[in-house]
Amino acid sequence: MSLLNPISPSKLRSDLYNFPCDDDESTTTAPPSVISVLASLLDRAIARNDRAAVNRGNAAVGDARSRAFESHQVLDMTIQSFLERIYRYARVAPPVYVVAYVYMDRLCQFNPGLRICSANAHRLLITTIMVASKFVEDLNYCNSYFAKVGGLSARELNSLELDFLFLMKFKLHVSVSVFESYCSHLEREVSFGGGYQIERSLRRLMCGGEITAKEKERREPNPVAQGLIYYM
Image (cartoon, rainbow, N blue to C red; front, side, top):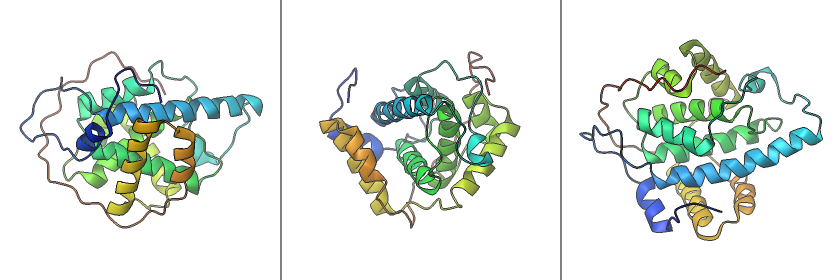
């Protein structure tokens, strides 16, 4: 894995088990290291799946629900920048990104025809992170706020959330042991690279149970910068 700023496994684990302080009103806090690791994994998966789509002539795959995440116009923003934007404005805790990664992996298991690619990655990310935030954190921003952060209308995100829940068969519980397993895989990604081996092993993990979370008081959302327009 190639990261501009090397991350130690201990730093990553510290971030993964950290929840922002309730009284922290700053929007300039450095993004947690899990964002860089997750972006690296997703970038490789997207590049691989984009190549596969070209080889098969960009033929449509998956059912109508999975194709709902595809955009005719790909957002001109890297995965890392998009994740950093979500962190800056929604301030979801680092564990939420791990649970979102569990969801995306589980989503592909339940729907073999669905592949994370440049056409659907941004929509999938904002949807999975929003749902993961609802699962992990007690207090959350509303869907319309997440929609603004992700460059969607509230109606679009509401529809994508419903599609996502059906594609997931409403199996959103993540056990502590599964959470720990995914954290360990992310740490291995930091230490050794080997992303493709990690991604294959992730598909063999069994999910279920529940993950606990600390109570967190939400601040009033700051106005979202106007640089991101509705692009879907």
